[in-house]
Image (tube, rainbow, N blue to C red; front, side):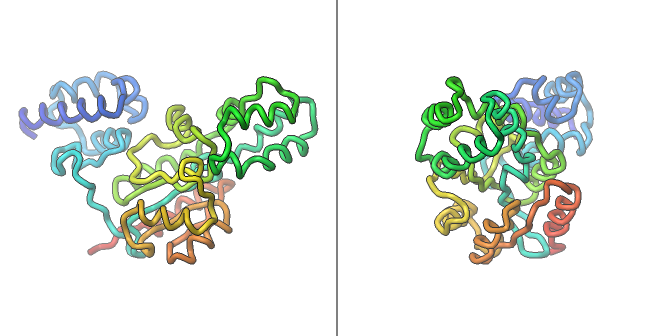
Length: 285
């Protein structure tokens, strides 16, 4: 790599980092780099940064290695591979897939309101569809549940974010997928939670090609219309989509559209990730 190329790479990296709203320190943490290494690459002082290093930086920025290296112009749609099974786009569910399920939040709430866990869970699930469909605001939801559980300052997001834990193997997989295929989120979730999770590093903060957030589109899995919207946003035929979810009902609804589907078992994430990688083995063509 010539000195000019090194400086060009450094400039592209700096622009991409600033566009993603990341400081050098934050990018170092996300990419697993030392501050001095990143600073030298941005200055063009490192003669030949390894492909592995640049690949980690690209994944942390949610871009491709080719785009960061200047092979593909910035803003141009990334080239999607196609797996041997015909997949070119992957949708991931969030709860139970990218993060472990949040049952511990119910225990914490039950302690705080001094009520049995079954009372807490009943109250939660009673309003879950309404809030996930965006028919209630978070303020309305917190006020309603707070009154029902005798917690005047109830804040579901605070309980949720305190207990939910990322499935690390899946975070690594999503970044791997994003370098090769179209990638999106398809989730039943409360308003604003996706943004908060990305900000807290609970789900990969990459450039998703599509995010189907139930609270924003006012649709829930397994309703037919949410899958129709997801197909439209994926920009590919239905039979090129793979859907990873922990709920078989949601998977069966997707299968009716001709999607590839895989059930995720968050009790055995390594096994589930291995099955996903096998399904996404790139075609040799």
